[in-house]
Length: 453
Ligand SMILES: *[C@@H]1O[C@H](CO)[C@@H](O)[C@H](O)[C@H]1NC(C)=O
Ligand SMILES: *[C@@H]1O[C@H](CO)[C@@H](O)[C@H](O)[C@H]1NC(C)=O
Ligand SMILES: *[C@@H]1O[C@H](CO)[C@@H](O)[C@H](O)[C@H]1NC(C)=O
Ligand SMILES: *[C@@H]1O[C@H](CO)[C@@H](O)[C@H](O)[C@H]1NC(C)=O
Ligand SMILES: *[C@@H]1O[C@H](CO)[C@@H](O)[C@H](O)[C@H]1NC(C)=O
Ligand SMILES: *[C@@H]1O[C@H](CO)[C@@H](O)[C@H](O)[C@H]1NC(C)=O
Ligand SMILES: *[C@@H]1O[C@H](CO)[C@@H](O)[C@H](O)[C@H]1NC(C)=O
Ligand SMILES: *[C@@H]1O[C@H](CO)[C@@H](O)[C@H](O)[C@H]1NC(C)=O
Ligand SMILES: *[C@@H]1O[C@H](CO)[C@@H](O)[C@H](O)[C@H]1NC(C)=O
Ligand SMILES: *[C@@H]1O[C@H](CO)[C@@H](O)[C@H](O)[C@H]1NC(C)=O
Ligand SMILES: *[C@@H]1O[C@H](CO)[C@@H](O)[C@H](O)[C@H]1NC(C)=O
Image (cartoon, rainbow, N blue to C red; front, side, top):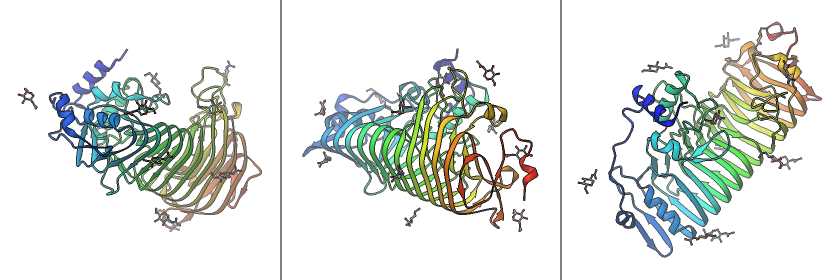
């Protein structure tokens, strides 16, 4: 059984941690913490200690002192943070004008980060409460998650077949999300940069009425280890969320709607290198009800991405302990409108037999029990990279119930010269598509190469 200590020694032995564990500094004294915080007119202002010493205790103290009906000023320029921030605020404005840089200390963060009960996700900062504004008026504030150390360590652990890294995070090697808005109501986040995320950049978890605007999100690895699982945003058990006017440069989903996401507006995004605007995966756990509905994404530019508009749903399963399908629920009323696509591998991609590429017979025999309906693609323009086999630019393949698919004003070619691509469909009921979609059963004899134009 691999525990954290042995994992850490493995990482040190392989060199993954050797140059990154920060030097040990003296504990911040209570006196120092007090000296960092100015309390005036009901506002808390925190000055950094400097010298790469931990500002976490002072930040926490300010979040406690000014937790209600208050303002917290974080002028920066740089806060070094090696303390999990579990904050509950009411009627508070946080002016984050400096960078909060989390230390790359895996030994500290991995066990200490706050567990969020979805795919073992954990966070370094759980922002909870009600009526909170977290903003950078100067656009210079934000969070640096020191992700490189985490991506390198993750690659090493994955390459040696390490345990606990499947599916992204795990409780053995938890990579904290820099900012989780969680158990919260009425939160605005505006004008921040979130960079170098060990895992997803942002997560809305059990929230209602949250808006992100003018965000700059970036995670690019400088080594050969990929910036794995660095989704821009994931939403889970979230209602009434807006994500707008932002730039995302990363290596996984730009925005991903996880189970029980509803009434979400995504607009005016520029997504570079990501996996697209994605519903799911859903239906992974036997008997669990997953609902994603009323999702509207408009005016999104997707460049060099793996997907454009995507829905991924697991098929059915006959094992009541299944964690690979068998969930129930629905995906309803999801719209993508005005997408600009440049060099996208799979511009339109819907599957309700996710994760069973190697076993098409399974899809026939175990139809998904999630109902997918009222799915709209309006005005999608641009070109696919040609990296998807058989000249495919769109794939809409259902193992279960899929009705009410509409596609209008779709103009997607292959390569910059816009060679005509093909669309494949499986089991759509009465679709209204303005492109020709070739019917391809999961286990049919008619394989795609025979059908190429
Ligand atoms: C830690 O504290 C000791 C004694 O107070 C002092 O001599 C030393 O310089 C301090 N080290 C750092 C890195 O601040
Ligand atoms: C803030 O309000 C909560 C309840 O709403 C209360 O428990 C907490 O003590 C308050 N904190 C401060 C510093 O007043
Ligand atoms: C939200 O908090 C601000 C102070 O940050 C306050 O002025 C406003 O009245 C609060 N709104 C509600 C609905 O409580
Ligand atoms: C969560 O962590 C447990 C224990 O490490 C592991 O067995 C499980 O596969 C992880 N789940 C995911 C989705 O990574
Ligand atoms: C990445 O580079 C390291 C050393 O530079 C090498 O040991 C490792 O095999 C490389 N990994 C991959 C996946 O290329
Ligand atoms: C679309 O989004 C871009 C930012 O990516 C913005 O500059 C532009 O004004 C938006 N257009 C419309 C019509 O909203
Ligand atoms: C989603 O919502 C439904 C209906 O309220 C509920 O039964 C189900 O447990 C929820 N699923 C998750 C993953 O929270
Ligand atoms: C579909 O979703 C959109 C946007 O989220 C919403 O405005 C509309 O009312 C929904 N339509 C139905 C039939 O629920
Ligand atoms: C589940 O389905 C698989 C594949 O169809 C079959 O081999 C297996 O016997 C089934 N198991 C049960 C418990 O029905
Ligand atoms: C279009 O571009 C692709 C990739 O560069 C090339 O293979 C193909 O021959 C081009 N087709 C035409 C008609 O120019
Ligand atoms: C492409 O066509 C080949 C040969 O017919 C087929 O085996 C394969 O499944 C197709 N690939 C995809 C991604 O559809």
